[in-house]
Length: 249
Image 1 (cartoon, rainbow, N blue to C red):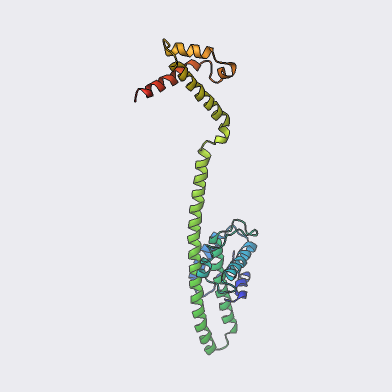
Image 2: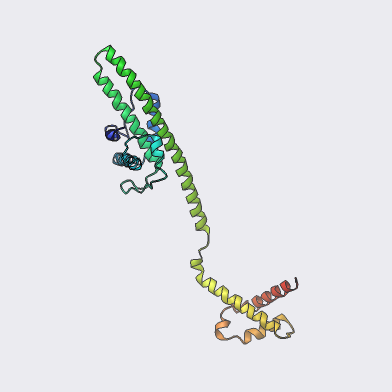
């Protein structure tokens, strides 16, 4: 396919255009599927996507303008679709535009045949060559829209996975907002350990009595670590848990 063929799409309205009279049934299906994928794109964006596709193929194949679905498929692993003129460009859209390009070329070829028909012999000859070209173009268009649908499914799955991950992340607790709580917990744990060591260092009549003595001798800063209302309970519970764990061994 020569370079000019890439711009035949400019003569075919990608939003409202009809396919060729021949192969009308298949072309209608292809056009409908392509338009559905490209529903959020303007004519200008679709035209630009067509030029991007032509550039990618030309660049990947070192100057070759041989455009087909297989050639474009080979480019998908090499290029990132970060074109500024078509934000959030997707491969499903690129292949949809390629499918419309083949329909456009087929339509142009059909129009040339109709315009130049002068006699029955010429009609027969042109019809023979047109049918051969038309079949090839229709197969390419069908393959392109097939890849477009494949990438559309992959893109949908990727979006669903991304949204799922974002939802899970949103439901998780951020440690950035827990900085003060982490520091407070560390101080509380340290104080509990200090009380346990205090209890084990002497012979107290009860855990409760040990907690009373321990709390009374704390300085002002350490006294603020635990709430006064449940400080004694917090310490004795920590001690009981520690002693219980020691009895396991």
